[in-house]
Amino acid sequence: MPEPFIRLQNVEKTYLTKDSAILAVDDVSFDINESEFIAIVGPSGCGKTTILKMIAGLVPYTSGEITIGDVRVDKPQTDLGIIFQDAVLLDWRDVLSNVLLQIDIRKLNKSKYKARAMELLNNVGLDGFEGKKPYELSGGMRQRVSICRALVHNPPLLLMDEPFGSLDALTREQISMDIQHLWMEERKTVLLITHSIPEAVLLSDRVIVMTPRPGQLAEIIEIDLPRPRQLNRLPEKFNEYAGHIRQIFQDSGVLELD
Image (cartoon, rainbow, N blue to C red; front, side, top):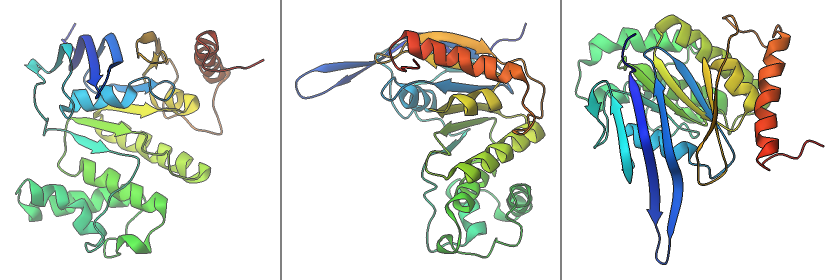
């Protein structure tokens, strides 16, 4: 069996404040295989985003170890793409130039990546919008641009931190489908942070369920549903997975379902 692409072993993160220490993540261990789509779901403050940032090397962990490939994460990682809740586009750049920002920063050959940028824009329904400025786009369109920007340099790893959180329900559903389509096309390794149980079950191969703070693993659930997954044709097993996760949160006092 191949070694996992990402491995967290007994990872802990404590934040030091002026007068106290806050344990955010407590003894978390899990593996992510290459080309796997993983979702982490849990209540606010359980350390989901902290885990993503530690994997990216943006936040140092207090103890334990994180490796990507066979390399220990001890500094910011560059061979990845990150999508945050806010698209954070540059107002003075058009859509294509915003997507190619990664290429400019990395000082890569822009002409080599322009065709890929256009292909990504076409794949998320933004063909014909490459010359528009961010203020001319809807919120969903801006987030699609940020997805293309995260993927244009063809990283093996995509990290997504609540990328649909600021969108309306219909746009959120459409972009979820866009993400699934892109993942099935390119088979990147993906880690999605979300509060949405249906979103986690819809998109992922496995769902990591977190406890309230300090964040620990409550359960890792393998999602055995065929792809592509269509929102209007979800099997009863989908509801069973979602119901099981809700039951975990009810048992831990996060949800009151009765």
